[in-house]
Length: 165
Image (tube, rainbow, N blue to C red; front, side, top):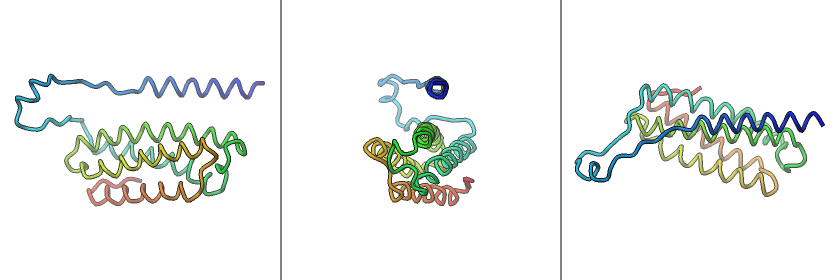
């Protein structure tokens, strides 16, 4: 009885942390946007450094908590390894959140702007992986596809002189 109570408590704390870490957005009036000839871009202080931090956290969590268990066959069926599936689900939420932050940083930096499309593609693939886990398990090939996309983002970031470890 103690295990389910602890698990529910951990999930609730994690959910509150994710909700509490949401970013605030500001909007500009349409008249001000229509009147300006230049395109508006958001500025983020230390965007490249933040991008490396958030992308590194996302890629590390994916590799440790999703890729390795899927490669070992522990995510084939959600009820087979319950604790591993729960850890992978929590990691997926964390990875998605960190990718969202990395995407915002990439959009704010002219150097990293070419990484916006691959990161968006990675978010979409992660979302589809969540659906496959819910419907009966994730295959190693599904996860390997996401891992190859991560490798592509890493190589493109290295080409933009932002190495992600």
